Length: 154
Image (cartoon, rainbow, N blue to C red; front, side, top):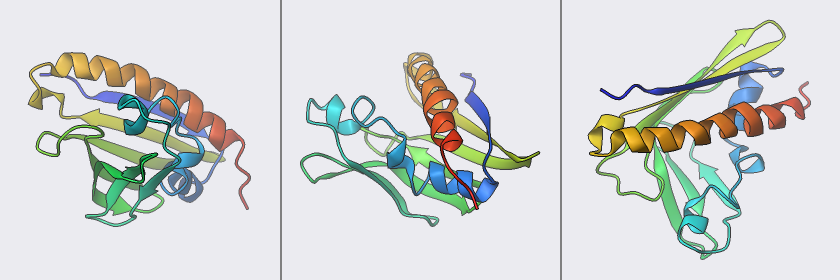
């Protein structure tokens, strides 16, 4: 069995503000110029990620061609606390993995924890996990954390 990926970071935001930054404002910190379906297809970088904030909603990347590339579907949506979604950017929906992100209050901020699971569905699941492990480390531990540091909360 392939272990899930676990990444966490403490940020100086309320759980509500961190949730909004991670979901509704994801394209302000996600590096679409290097990590996106558009560039993986050899196209210019996308400019937008859309998150439909409800169970059953889609998470899509709007490619440079205007086409939507499905990243996944929202399975659970609890603003300020957590969300869980299928994860399949650039792949077919028949073998998605799952990403769950939780936002837990701590001191003057919150802990954001991402768990990415379901790699055993793939023959090369351990290799896919290794690729995502490095990527999530940079995305959550560096880019999201940096964006959260620069966010002013009321």
